[in-house]
Length: 459
Image 1 (cartoon, one colour):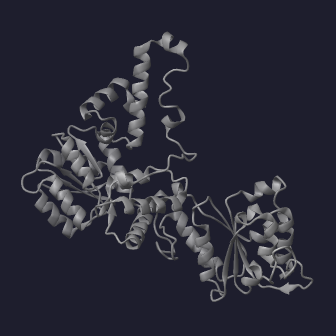
Image 2 (cartoon, one colour):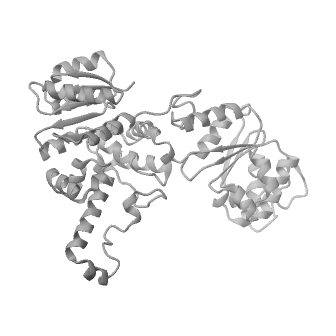
Image 3 (cartoon, one colour):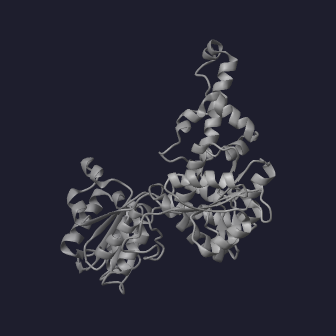
């Protein structure tokens, strides 16, 4: 059960929130001041703290600072009847998950609490832990299934094909299979099929003898000779030409290769792990990939999920990359702010894990403090297929034509445009009105009035 600590010097507010949240199924403790709240945190584990800002003794901002010093991953929501832009900025910079003004909308606070308490939650652990295999980070159900597949297939000689978008970690999975196989002490030789010119591919895979073509000044072993008794990793296998596919099929069937320009056949014993971001079944139907080769390669298929399908792993990956790049760059960046993490959780990552690492590396390089703030996160303007509802509609396309402007009138068009912009800002801020107001550079009260005016809460 998710446990929440409520800190407020007003008895009525503590009782109200406790009753509200217990009805939602949360386990709730309450404290009247910051000092007793800190003692409670030392004695119990909580998933969320909700605190008033204005309290005698240790106020909400000081409490937030103490919590983030001792429990950096514990989300904190601040509430207050006295809305101050300075307090809001200070709270978000210190790592508050959100900042809510009294009187608050019950549906809104429920939504924010759900977001805060699920942000760091992942699916239950299965047979493998978060770092069961070097470089592959995750505890989500999708990744646990992959860890289980690696453990089961690695000791066998079965060929494997790994499906997945670019940046999902296909080569890391291939390496893990090799490292846990019976040939782990033999070579693991990777090759990216799309990176080699077509006229050199045969030589790269099967080798060549001196004088077999212009530039062949020495005998050269190919991928399969180099990987003999070990593992050959063929990335982007869908890029192979039909001729090379035919020759590769022979390697799989006969376990032998013939170098370019040679009459001698060489025996090889190689396990093949292939990877692709294409749907090979569709390539077979289109006549671009051999069906018999596909079945030889895809004895065990593994699908790597895109990062947008395992968002619960984002905090784990962020922590891993923070440690890695802080060490490499000689910096002391220890964590990311709650708002910064929320920005990442709301992003679709078209470049997957590779893009997330790039974002964190850049954030560590740019940040001057020991915590990454949202302004140090540079997200790609490239959009993945998944889009927010407002993004499919051009933001400033209030009218389809000048004639429509005159038919509808200026006031109606401006109101329509303002409504679209507010919806867009709310989506960008995960429906936090405080953050949306900051984005729009208007007061919270003004935004609340406009939301009510346009009936946006009912959308």
